[in-house]
Image (spheres, rainbow, N blue to C red):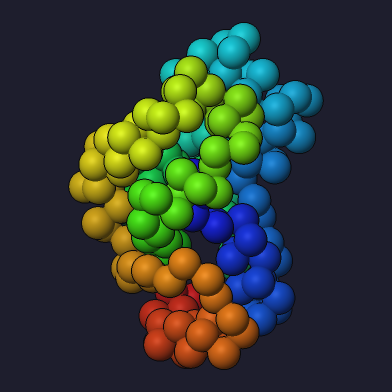
Length: 167
């Protein structure tokens, strides 16, 4: 949450010319409501089932840049599936920066909606620890907080061979 997946995916899509798929946006279109509203009505488990189903269906679509949700990679078999269909990039942002980015929209984040502002960093840190094992399966880990065009181009060039291999 808050690592910049959607924003950076858009920029990668623009640079590579590949279509962008934002899983959260796609799910909201399917649900006809926000993810927060869906989770409130049907629960997190139902959301994760829908998310996993969408991921499997996206692997059948032509090559694209996919911005997943933060928990997508942790579903059973998800990382293996993503790795077998493309290059998986883990965006790693320090907890204080994530807390700063998320502090003003906690109510729209189901995993954080009940977290008091003073507990935000601890809650985010705990979530990252829980997800660390599945995130470690990514092909590459990018640790920048901000990305200018030159940095992004350099990073994409550094994984270019993997992109070609995945196609």
